[in-house]
Amino acid sequence: MPAGLHHVPGGFTPVVLVPGADLVFLSGQVAWDEQGNLCGTDHVSQMRQIARNLDTALAAVGCGREHIIKETVYVVDYHPRLLSGLFAVLRQGVSRAPASTLVGVAALFEPGVLVEVDVVAKVAAR
Picture 1: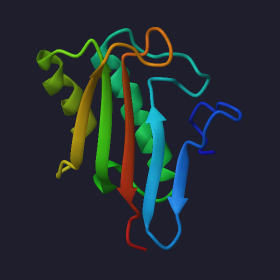
Picture 2: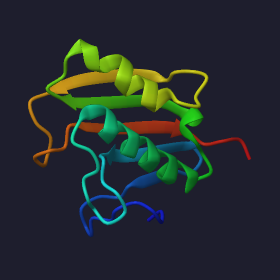
Picture 3: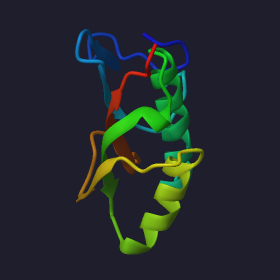
């Protein structure tokens, strides 16, 4: 369990490294801080916390967002006007965008959670 991420005992494994395949799978990240508090009441502010969580989880296996090869972004109450703000945060500091799927959803697992992002990353060369 990477320090800095909220832990849900028995709920899921936040980071899975596939030995030999050089792949990392991250469980869906939401805008929880380390204590499990939801950060932000709008899509973009929640994406800021999600980006921090992605950075923390990926750093635990020696990667960063630049190593993401596939992402799926789930957005409650999606509207096209949200796209540029969400991806501006997610792409900050990244020179190449990964393969990406955005899915508009009616709801996520908990009220108030507006965005969830899961990713697959290629382990950094060692």
